Structure formats: structure tokens, C-alpha cells
Image (cartoon, rainbow, N blue to C red; front, side, top):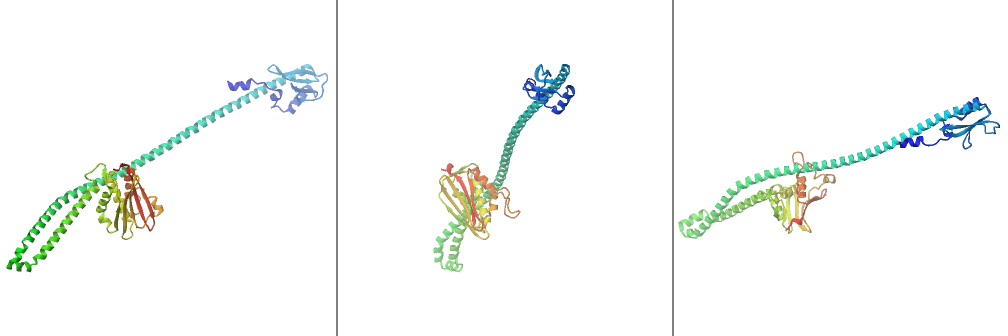
Length: 406
């Protein structure tokens, strides 16, 4: 083994082998065996124990370890005593060598184990870092999936809501269109009858008896007023028909796929549909610029526009003004909804697109209007920008890419 080679192959010095033995006690023991006149020295001449002076006539014996002389024992004693003391020293050196080898082996093993532990610790740290990275990636994927699920839930809610509106609009359109059709037809027929009566009016006035009745019943005024009533009724029927058309266009009953539209027409349609809700709160002023035809999902964008319009109306402290402005700027179509209401505080402005967040009283809103609007606009590759100043009003700008325009 590599560890053993370093511990068992190296050579030790006399000082190293006697390093664990107190010099005073070693000197006292040798003096008791050999007498006071002795000296133990290493191969290098270092005096380990005993006198450093000259010992004339002293017996001199080599002190060996593993057959190699490490030092010399000199004493003014008999040769047998000196050899016996040297033998004891060699036994002591042998035990010292075993102790040193065991000690160094232990240190090498400990160091080797410590290095292995360090390697294991480094591997554990690297593994922990990988697991931490994987955990972060998993958390990010979970957050992304949760976001997708929440967006899908909102879209499903919106789709269900739009489907309900579509079914309602379809029923209303069917129920209204038929009676409005024959009412308008009858009004046109009545208007034609009045014209025929007006044609025979001169002949009736020429007859004395009929002329008196004509004047007494004020037929001239009745014909004139009846003509005005019919014209007003025809205008009302036309208005109802336009409302039905706007309602169908708003809910996108007839068109479920994307198509090219002029968003100005959509804005007018949304304003007509929301007129009853907006009129008590604000006057709508439209400043519509020329726009290219934009490929979009009409019903969804109409829903986003309606939510922004109603949001502006709800921001009014009293009857105010809502300005709708549309422009084509560069590669973007920008539609602004500006109100002069109470505005939005900065701490609230950061949360207005959060799902279910609402500043209205409990039971007066789901808190999804702006969230769904943002999702709808984002699905068309656009964004909603907001500027607001408390007490001065707000501006919500729908920005749509013009890359799909014609």
C-alpha cells in the first residue's frame, strides 16, 4: 500500500526513536546500570545522555536498530554491562520505532480519510447544488403551469360568459328581428296610404259637405301629424334594428374565427351596446383615426373594449367624460380610453390586473374584467399600458401589433 510504504520504509534517527523518552529519566537509568561515567551519542556526534567529556578507557558498543548502528554507548564499566545496557536501549529503540510507525500510519490514514471525506463533501455539495438547481427549475415549471392553468380557467370563464351572451343575443335578435321587420313593413305601408289620402284631399275639400267635416275634424293637421308619427316610428324601428346588429356584432354570433376588421367599427358597436350603462355616468367622445384592417377575434376584443369602457365609467365621481382615441402609429394600432374620473393610487395601480382584485364594493364585480382584458390583448400579441393620476383620471391604452393588418 502507498500509505504503508511511507511509514515502514524510511530510516529513523536515534533522537527520533528516543523522542518519547524523557532524557533525565534515560540518563538516570543508564547511570544506575553503568555508573556516572557514560555517554550515549548518535552517529552525528550528538550527545543524547551522559557526560560530554572525554572517557578514557571506556568500553564502546554500537546501538543498532534493524542491524544499522544509530549511535554509540560508552561507559567506564565492564563490557558485559555496556552490551547489556546497549541491548536494553535497542529494545527501547525497537518499541519507539513501532510507536512512530503506528503513529505515522495513523496520521496518514486519518489524512487519507479526511481527504476522502473532503471529496465526499465536495461531491455532496455538487449534488446539493444540482438538486437545488433542479428544484428551482421544477418550481419555475410549476409556477409556469399554474399560470397557464389560471389563464386557461379565466379563458374558460370568459368563453362561457361569451357563449351565454351569444345565446342571449341570438335569442334576442331572433325575437326582435321578426316583429321589427313586419312593424317596419306595416309602417311603410301606412305611410303610403297617407300619401294616397293626401292625393284625394283637394277633391274632398271641393265638396261642400265633406269640406265642412274635413275642417271640423281638422283632417289637415291629422294627416300632417300622422305623417310625422309614422316617420318617427320608422326611425325608431331602424334604430332597434341597428341595436340588434350591434349586439350580434358584439357577441360575434356569426363569426367564430379570426377575420380582418376595422376596429373603429368595433368601438362604435361597443359604445352602442353599452350606451344605457355609460350614459348616466359619462359622455363618450370618439376621436377615431384611420386604421388598417386588423386580423383578430372580434368577439374577444369587443369584450376587452367593453370592460375598459365600463371601467372608465365606474371611475366617475359624477357625470364626466370618456374619450376614445384610435391611431395607427408605425407598426402598432393604439386605442386609448381616457376618463376624467378619480384616478388610481400608485399602490392600487400595481394590482389592477391581478385576478379577482377589485376596488368596488363586495358583490359589485368579479375582479376579472381587467385581467381578462389583458389576457385577450396578450393573446393577440399586444399589451395594455396604463397612466393614472389620483384626482385627474386615467388612460388605458390597448396596443396591438399591426403586422397582421392589410
